[in-house]
Length: 309
Length: 309
Image 1 (spheres, each protein chain N blue to C red):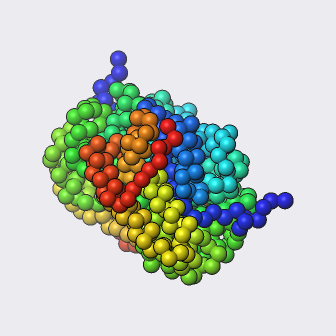
Image 2 (cartoon, helix red, strand yellow):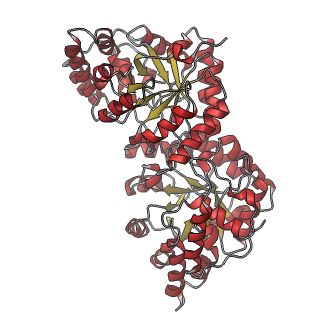
Image 3 (tube, rainbow over the protein chains, first blue to last red):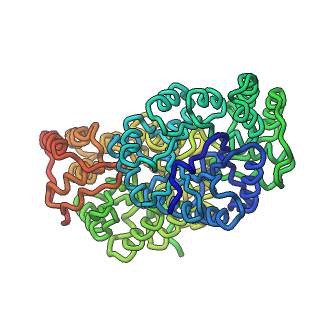
């Protein structure tokens, strides 16, 4: 007997977790697992591994499989993870997702194949269908990763509708990183049971009030406490005030590259120096830029418990 | 003694070759090699393997290595090939390029890491430098693949200048698929010895007259004869007339997806039916669309010898 997929759906606050590196830019699996555990005990309901913030596409499939395996061997709660597995090459998506299921995580996040642009709805549907059929596992909760500014390949509502119809119970929801609140609103209204996560915690309260399920956000690597406050109290009288604080923290990151900046903030709060490392095309954050960012965050009531170093 | 890299530089007419597939969407290495050989004997000076038209990013690294190995075992002239090796993950770029050099092809085409957008010049330079250093082979002729409409990551002139300075003799040229003739012109003027290929045969004559070296084009899979005519006669009195014919053939492809359409044209001319297969997000060409395309091509004096079936 397998658990019905809907029973395992995620909700609430998810950080798009950082992938921590060694000085030689290889993945530091231990540090990444520690940071993930720290996120889970400091406000995050779940953690997304290998999203945009996790520099997923800067790693080879072999490197990604190795981290998934290391997570599998760790004592991280596998039901509180989502793993980014969408690649340009569908067989890579299949391999990464199968491995994700193998370690006991049923939640995968699917970027569309993102090299070709202006693809037809038929072509995008066919690519996703080929992936889902190739994975061939009814336990799967597949979340769509809608991030048109980076992929150039939006998941339009027509394609979502076709996917929901063809794969009910598998196509579980979406991380909408378009920043377009109207799109989140429209999907929540149009697709009942399709779990909409805002890709920015700025809209956490707004999507919850409309029937969305939470946020999956890059900056939650450091704003997790404030995001937790909103999620815990979202039906309370204080919700708007708490969201205003969270929004201010999120807005402190406007115009800074998020992964290197979040890594630098962790290091400022006691993380290991080597965590500053990022793969190009990212560059390490400049200390002066982090000074300015920290000042903006502190003006927004930012606090961070010591990270897992 | 290794041959000086400049002696091995490519020029003239290059098709961005199709990767022919089996019905199950696996690579048909034999057919791809046959088609490549056919291109080399029907007007192409050289062939680019695994460009955009070759659906490079729709294949896993393992699949790409397997085709490179098959090419290595074939009797294709290795010095008349260029292989696309640029990936989002730099270690993949390194592995594919090393294998390219292993089979005796020194010409590699580097897409930038194309997932992240708005990357800094420092970050883009660092990614390329990490790749070139990782490859660590002075035989390499690295061509940059400038295709902003698909990558969203342009190779700006500042980055090109830094790369030429840091890696003279290795950074050999560019395939400019921006369609922006002014950009080709500016690069030819600014970077002597940096070989500029137009990414469309529409500008073949224009770039040659300015000092560019040729074209690397998707549609040359089928316009190779007309492109040959231009290249052979570009200094002659007939050059403009020949280019007008070539341009008309190229323009017949406006608004059709090029890889499936070129595959369908080969099949219409005697290629095997299975060659119609493309990986999603591409879809097979609709017969009616190919009828219309063929009519436009025939109006542009198109002829095609029987492909290698």
